[in-house]
Amino acid sequence: MIRIGQVIGIKPEVIEEYTRIHAEVWPGVLERIAASNIRNFTIFLRRPENLLFAYMEYHGTDWEADTAKIAADPETKRWWEITDPMQVPLETRAEGEWWAGMEEVFHVD
Image (cartoon, rainbow, N blue to C red; front, side, top):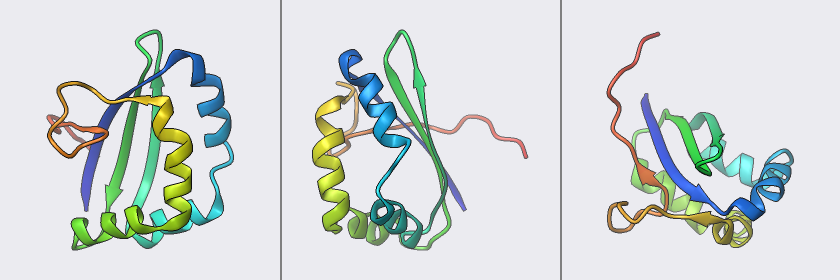
């Protein structure tokens, strides 16, 4: 299992809408996440900085293949058409990233 942390900004004027739609994520999006071996997926909001922090656990063996399936999923694409314009990617993110990856520096069970 691999723990993954990611961060991205969010436009302050859409926080309420972003929160509302995430209270009712489309079933197909959730099914695709689960089928791609992602578990314990959580998104946190930090105000007043307006940052989203995502945490997930990957239980598969081929991250690239599993995330490619998510990116190719038509329902997920429609979901991202709604959520992506609400987000503000960090200028310091790596090339090809939307959400900026984070380095794990501590963990305890």
